[in-house]
Image 1 (cartoon, rainbow, N blue to C red):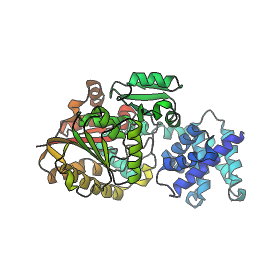
Image 2: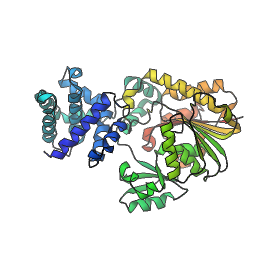
Image 3: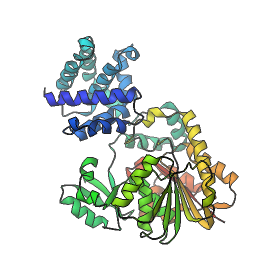
Image 4: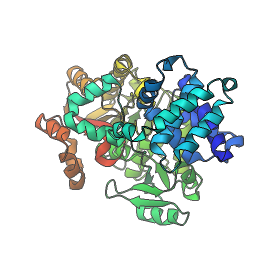
Length: 454
């Protein structure tokens, strides 16, 4: 038994306790706060994040397994529940670690919790689970278990294709980069990163996209290339959005809900740093981060604007050639990397978010010039936040016509989409919008629709 593994697991338990106690809303907030501490800079970051994310992602299944042997599971102290979740996850997914080692480490850690009162229970439970690993693995091979409300909704949309989605969500998230073409091309960036022992493979579309094969987020952020603004860490689905808006050099573009600037900086690249981008967000901390990213990447055309986009902004009326509405959402397309959305959402939160999305979208339509184009996108695929928002918008803002976004995608991407039964349904119903499901490109799920102002 290696002491550093014991220390690592104790650290993971602190993070999981903070998350399940509701002290942080997002799991990455919990582990990033921990990793930023100078005391923890030598921590095995990759393993810590993988285990934290895996436990939360599979917690419905892990809890179900533990309840088999612990009928009073809910009455156990949270730290003991998390210890059992973590050890069960390791028994099922860390096949390289002997089962006896996993059990013994958990028992050793339990002795420091509640004066060791639970060590016998932990030992007995984990030994029972270890004896039936093969049986439980068959269950988990089916993928992530979704909350009943989400499972029902996605089953109605996808049918048998849902099996591919939940299996995809169980996989570790792929790390994607976007080369800053104002400074470097994708191939050149891949070459530069290879000298840092980071392997990144350029993709066919978008042409500035790369998939990281070797290296992690923290390593990338430490590189000179990152500090020099040569790339932005951005999911592949998110990188499609700017291309579908089709911004041109010299135009005025308004982005509603810009956040820290992932899509904003991409728009500036496609505009060749010519024109104007008004980037709107009500969170000043995000605008501060946007400003840092813009400076780092050598972008000069972005004008941050701190406003609440659910209220009209009269001075922007009919000023934009293009508008992007990147609305706050439930994030149900990001379960691969943000598994907490499995537990932070319900149908009530969806309805609340949908009202915000409708307000933002209706206000944003006023900022378009005649002939201008507007794109609405959310990193979720729930009915309430996608097609129901679209239906409401089109009933209340009649002077726009929907754009067929498929024509802006290269044939290789369209061919992949056509393999999906869900895509065939959208085409048959002439929906024109795009649903990117996680199993299409190993990326986040994303919904995109566009209109042109008559």
